[in-house]
Length: 214
Image (cartoon, helix red, strand yellow):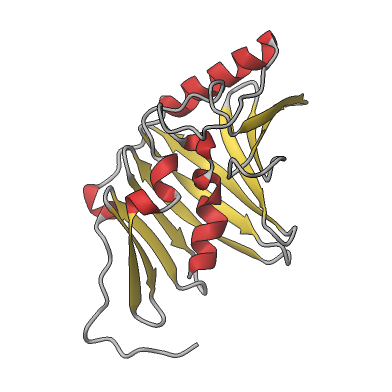
């Protein structure tokens, strides 16, 4: 189950998504005026998101693809539903994150503050002043931001891609310690979506369900 948390939320583990006063205590990169303005614009976009829903496609290092639907409501609430046959549901209610396996009828819980997920749901993001941000590239139709998920890393191991113009987070790619790349691509996102509060109710095991192995 932890592999789903890693693949989806390692981006959030980066100090890239920390709020003010939470950035890693490492030297920041000095950006050009153009790049600094770009980072400010992307920060403003991210901070302007209060709710969002959409679909996602996850591509593992092996090339295997899974997909599903996500719902986000700041601060602190998110839901990732994988499509069958993947039996995974991930829900945060703002304090706790629950990872449910519907096949095994199990639910693992973690404090949101101790997981990467708590960081991506921050209300305040300032990329230009964040020491995790290492590079900004302007490619045709997109902005690519390179960052590190730890102050101990000397090079970027996460890349975020935003469409431009029409600024929108499109995908992120994470390089693990073995060099494998996992990409999560977002599709059909709807910022400002009206979301039912019960989407963020934590799942619990069904006491009457028979546990299936495998």
